Structure formats: structure tokens, C-alpha cells
Image 1: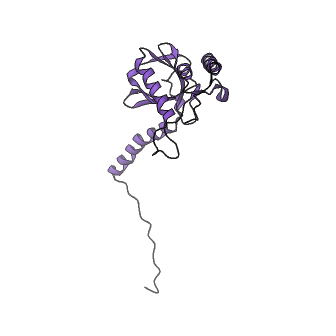
Image 2: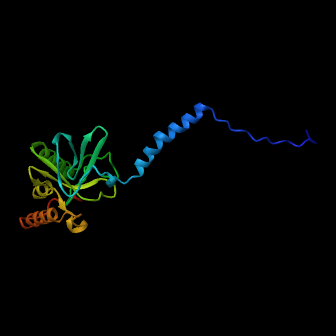
Image 3: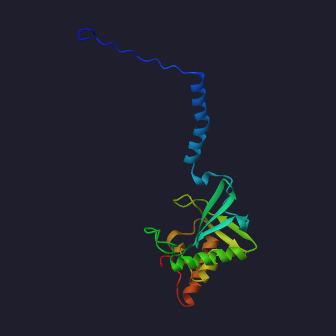
Length: 195
């Protein structure tokens, strides 16, 4: 063995028909899923923006005072961050095991009640989502802007002055007017940052 050179043989890679079909099926099934994940959330043409869309209230799940989910189908759930307002968080984001925040629970209770008694629910989407991919929009309950309702209940602070109108100036003016009325009537108890 000392004097004989060691021959290196290149292995031939042979493909069986089974291996080829398995590779092809991976490309057929995985590639479209991967491409769908890369598509921005607002690329879905099925979600119109700039016009009110009727929503079955039974399909709405209120997450907290300023966020809700709409279950359009089993596979299609849209998370909506309500524009114009900020409510207290339900829990401390750094310590989720902590008890519910009283202000956050109160805002969520108000939202759940408001949606439960509404006979008509509509959603008005902004053209762009937020940085987390959530839809930005206004809900209308029986024709009334939900953001205005929760501001008037003093369970939210307005966010138009910080983030702008998101392409929906009429609704933003309604929110600003409601916030001004609340401040004039004796305070702004509803700052979203309070717990």
C-alpha cells in the first residue's frame, strides 16, 4: 500500500425515475408557496381599499381595543389595525405572563360590545399595510366610525397627529374633531400608553 498511489474515483450520480419525480414534485409544490410568502401583503388584489366593504360581524374577532381579525374563510384571516386611535395594551409586551392591564381590558370590552350590538359592520382599508403586514383601516358600526366611538368613550388616544391620515382624510378629520371634543369636555383619559 505504501508504494501504490491511491486512485480517486469519481462517483457517478445516477437518478432513478422515482428521484426525478420526487424532485419535480418539490418544485411544483414548494416553489409557489415560497413565492407566495415573498409577496407583500398588500399585493392581494382581492382586498379593495379606499371604499367601504361590508363585513359579517360574526366573522370579526376583536383582539383588543384597536385590533381585530376578520375570518373571510378558513384559510384567509385578515388582521386589521384600526386607524386613528391607540388603546392601552392588554398585557405588558416584555412580560406577557403579567395580569391583564385594566385599561386594555376595558378598551377590549368596549370594542367587543360595540361590535356585538352593531347590525352593520363595514371596513374601509388604507392602501398600504403597517410594518407588521396588518391592514390599516377604519371600521364603521351601523354607519358610525368606530375610532370616533372609542375616543368619545375616552378609552383611546388619537394617532392622526403622529402618523397622518393614511390616505383617508375625511375619516382622519372625524377622529381629530372627536379628540378635540373630548379634550374640551374635560380631559383625555384615553391615552393608549396608559395602563
